[in-house]
Length: 75
Length: 537
Image 1 (cartoon, each protein chain N blue to C red):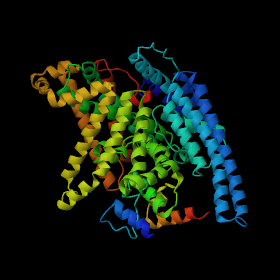
Image 2 (tube, one colour):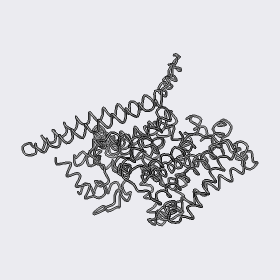
Image 3 (spheres, one colour):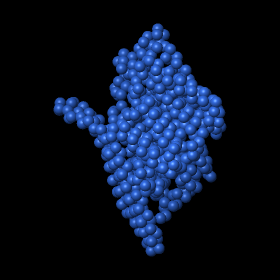
Image 4 (cartoon, rainbow over the protein chains, first blue to last red):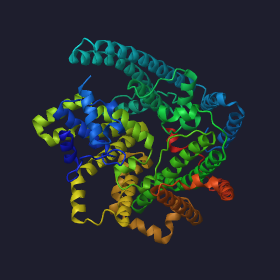
């Protein structure tokens, strides 16, 4: 979870993403930033996120992103 | 059959009558028959091509879904005795097999689109190269181009991919699936609806309601107003400026950017209003395709508001799969190792963005001006993305500016002009001519005198009275747009949605729109009864 927060802070310096929601619904993350986030998760956590997981419900909050990463890391 | 033609209106009226008189559970069959008739009216030879797309994607989606169910059952069985790595390998192997079916379906349908739409362009381009080399040109084949092939190919491939991803349950009824692909209000120029969004409405058993019928009719008439009064009128001037591109420069290029913005807006959103309005009269809700695009304050925001379903298609089925793919992630790792973290992080995003916009341009038209148009949009979006630290620094330095209405309007005007500038590639249809026209805005200052001495009216082929009329029409569009944006900000409904609650006002507006459209249509300026611009995609 800390890694996710770290990456999001690099994308939006000065923003505290702890407990943040509405990342997609409120347009906080653009499609370019989502892709960068996925690339960084792959590089730092070694979890590959396929395109079919790029759904609003999987990226709308830090908790949702982390839940998706944990699920994909486990079969 | 153009959707703004009299024959289409008669066809739509007859379809509506039969639709509402038919028992509810068979209404979708009426729509299917109407859609196939509409399609065949264009050219009966279109039917085999759309049939091939319908049959292939329907069959392959069912095949993929059946395999997925079997693979899921087999994986569940493995859980009790296989290791995590073994389960991962099994899942990946089975997924690869389903992927081969998907790829076969995509290759078949995109291949068909590529051959029918782009062979001529490929041969022309090859002939240009061969001409430079002193070789004889190849014969350019004349191939049939089925109506709306770009749109129905996108709709069907999106469906196939969504079934593969497990996001959509495959439709077992071939006839229902055929209706989803060929639904006539949306086949020529979209919107590119997703199956899960459209199916419940398309196959639902609707009751004839005053609000749907009234709102739908008002929206159709508003669409005709935009198309016939605004777009078709202004197109006369655009054509004059393009035809005289060698001498109508400088100020005329600025005018072209402004006037063509009105043309493309009126033509495309007008067409959407007609499609969505007609569907609404049947109780069917198509996906909205525009959200006040000229109010956008950035290029990225513009593409979230203009031709929304096309943008979403390219994002979901090209940009994301490409940018998160294995090869791109490998490239990112290579970039990190050899060129630093900043480059490695950007490589997948940049390459995917440029390729996506290259394809977006190509989808719009088989010509170099469209490709350059697409790439310029991609470059602008990337530049805007890179400038974010600058914007943050600016707003930190001047904290009160961001929330101000004037700042918002300045950004909207800037975005409008930038998008209009790039869009002029669509007018001139020639990249060097367009770039030359852009350059003339900075050099051809003498052209501005035509505004003061009245020469401009003669050069543009429209009398002053028509310009005044056009100005009033554009102002009306602007004012209605502002009212709708304010309503949206307050969580309310657009103007046309609220009209059915006031029948007298609704009747007056409809009568007024019919009168204006009829008068303008017979205004005698010699408008082209041309098809919608996007109907040529």
